[in-house]
Image 1 (tube, rainbow, N blue to C red):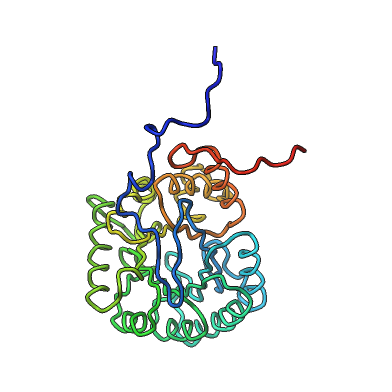
Image 2 (image 1 turned 90 degrees about the vertical axis):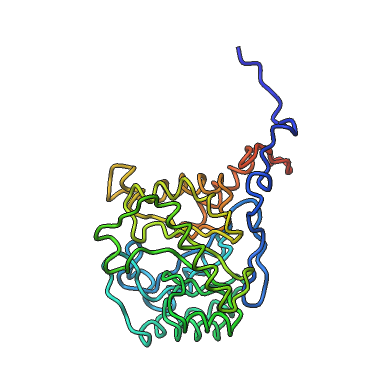
Length: 314
């Protein structure tokens, strides 16, 4: 018969985050501020100002709906906002810099006037990144891993926070036949090389975040393997950002490509939180934030039970 037990675990059983991952980054230097990275992942809310993004294309193409959506994400608990004006889904049609700027600049300008939440510009074009930073953005999020030297210059000259992602191929080719021997180690090696090159180019390590690029040139199994081993990337000593939100591998596991993947997002988010991942780029802020709060309250990463004031009885 189960007689119950104390929820407070003995100290010797606590698997503390800093012990498990001694190289795990705890801060990220952005353009004008330092972002503390606590035990729970911070949530980066996605605002796609595109007609063709895979999940929310066309919903926020005009500035006002995009601004309202961004502010709604902040109200729901977003710690950062990622603004993008070009779809990077598989086989997406590229857009030119003029069109991308037309889509994102009014939104970034309005958001930066109305909230202190840090803004990231999701782009691979140096001129778009430069204009976004001038409008108030703090971070450049580049799916090409800052392959363009001009983008590196923009980041360096503006002291921006940078997020370098791994992608095999381009959005137009990446899902044709992605192949790896060991997906975790190959992605790790690529990000290590990109980090080293960014540092050699004058970008301080404290400004660099790394993203293994789930969904970018990977099969469903590659995505699952990466998600299960994201703690490997703490060995780089940089913040780790993961963008798993609503991606195809979730539908694959659910056995329904057309399924609403919001609940599946939560499962992946909790698995990533268990690995100490610092930042999650997601569409659905409120449910993931609430799931993470409860995850932490009942023991979370290392079994420490929440000791806050108990809620009032209903």
